[in-house]
Image (cartoon, rainbow, N blue to C red; front, side, top):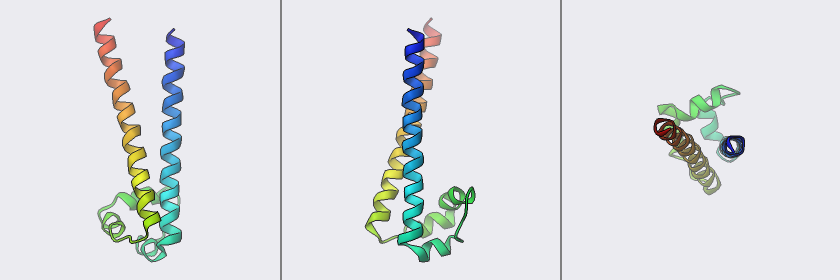
Length: 103
């Protein structure tokens, strides 16, 4: 029984993680292709620097100026996927802690 629960938890975690990563990548690429002037103002980041630029104060201010609807939709999907992933992690941790305290 524990194995089934563990496999289910890990499978859901992996699916949510993959969904979050894909949403993030799509968002970054849409900014790069549909808002090239903002991408250049962000410093045309590469590889590991991209997420850091997107959460910085300067980057956040620039990204609020985006007018393209596709980029805005991708931003919403990215934020929603991230929140859902974080909620899942917190929920599993809280339920696990409660379960372990009660047993």
